[in-house]
Image 1 (spheres, one colour):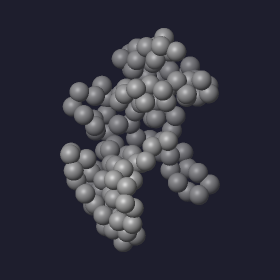
Image 2 (cartoon, rainbow, N blue to C red):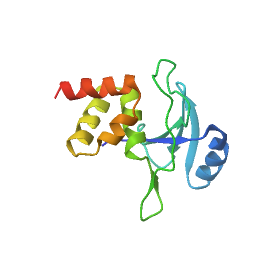
Image 3 (cartoon, rainbow, N blue to C red):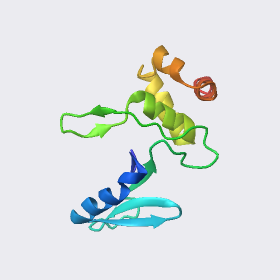
Image 4 (cartoon, rainbow, N blue to C red):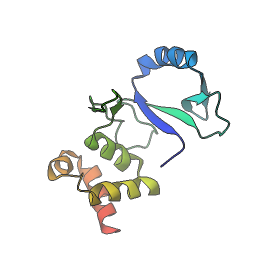
Length: 134
């Protein structure tokens, strides 16, 4: 859906990730407050991997830090965010595209009562706001 990838990592792992990524053609860059990897072979500026740091807030005004759990592993061994973590990230960021993603998740039945109850009061209020704007 987007040209870039957001990757949640522990800040302590960034240097090790950077070294491995550079061996396979990525270049590390820090620009406009964002740590990222850029594919040297790709000419489009938005084909980047942006890092967000686990258990840290992306922006000072964010309601919550980036959650980080074991996630889910695909058959190919790729770890992806769990639905509860993804929902928390979307509710924290709360841009228009995040609200649309939340509506999609909710429409697909991914936001279970258990997940909803695990949210903080502020995030439950945001979820309710999204539901009211359908």
